Image (cartoon, rainbow, N blue to C red; front, side):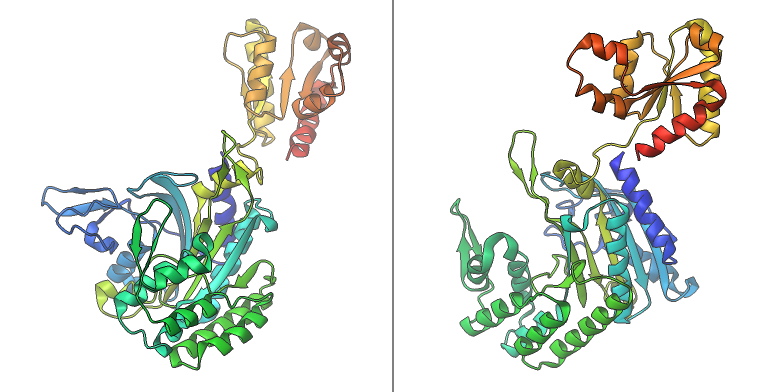
Amino acid sequence: MAERRILDAVSRVYETYGFEPFDTGAFEYADALGKFLPDADRPNEGVFALQDDDEQWMALRYDLTAPLARFVAEHGDSLPKPFRRYAYGPVWRNEKPGPGRYREFLQCDADTVGSDRPEADAEIIAMAVEGYAAAGLPRSAYALKINNRKLLNGVLTAAGVTDPLQKLAVLRAVDKLDRLGPEGVAALLGAGRKDESGAFTPGARIGPAAVDAVLDFVQAARGSRGATLDRLSNVIGGSPEGDEGLEELSRIGEALARLGIGEDQALFDPSIVRGLEYYTGAVFEADFSVDAVGERGEALRFGSIGGGGRYDDLVARFTGQRTPATGFSFGVSRLAAAAAAAGAVAARARGPVVVISLDPTLMGEYFGLAGELRAAGIPTEVYLGASGMRAQMKYADRRLSPAAVIVGGDEIAAGTVTIKDLDMGRLLAQSVADNRVWRDERPGQVTAPRSEFVAQVRRIVEAAG
């Protein structure tokens, strides 16, 4: 399946960078997850929660980062510093499903805990770029955008916005820029916005000058990372926190260049803020940019297919001591759904070679053929149903099998094996209009000596990718 291929590909990238696999359990105590829930007595909005025998609330993890922070807080003294781990597995969110949005889905994370260097952020970003390439996603199918939370904090401080709730409202407003545009964000930064249905969303209620400063900031992206930094330096206004954010972005840019990550692979974009409140510095997000169409012809927008950032305060919720950390999470399920809908990668994995079973008395021969192919590293199955030849070939087609192996009495007598290249057969059949000609020519079908059939099948499988 597509998800398994993505997990395997991304995990190999993580391991080449020296990250080791480590996972935590699916259940955590609800307060350890750090979810900001509206109902403390029954914390099951947004997550799936239940009470244990001691009437403590437990919840299924909603991401892989919060459980990591709890683990590091408990076992930090025994861990190597920095602690570099990757993990993949299901997470759960109690929210309305949509295109590429599920209540249960897979994530694949890499995290570095214990380094405050911006180069650690750059390394995480580089792994994300390599991970998408390894998963088969074309470079043109996504954009990986980078920002730093300290920049916007500096803009707000310079504009006189210091109230934490107002700052949070600003973050949420900016996060909607791609959907609402500058005018919609300006309304949410001010008094509020009424949508098409008539529903009203209260705004951050910052002053007009602050609104202008925020809009100038989020629209400061230019063609190159260097040009964007130059533009941002003119917008920030010289605040200490903003200058710190600029310096961190500059070092990330330098490291990315040395890591071979081009300007078209990872760019600076001040409009990226990420929704979670635990990010403290650099933030990054991969946005799926290919048009996709649903089964009924409707346009589908998948949005983010991965993201992350620096979360230096997350472990401190348990220990009271600041612990620098940064990470990136692949939204594996959403990535698989988006890429399949857009035709960017194959929606399904290729099936095995199928050995057609024509004669019940030859089952031993069929299993022998399958055993030889498996010994050569070629996934193979013997058809074990009761259908005839045509139904078995249709079965192989539905499995997306690259080849079918056919042996009957004639082949045994001649010491040969008939092999059907299913991809080639489908391709050649398109140019054959006459059924009789198709039966006579048998496109994509070859007969090989028994001693050479494994090599012939291998060529077909390798050509099929």
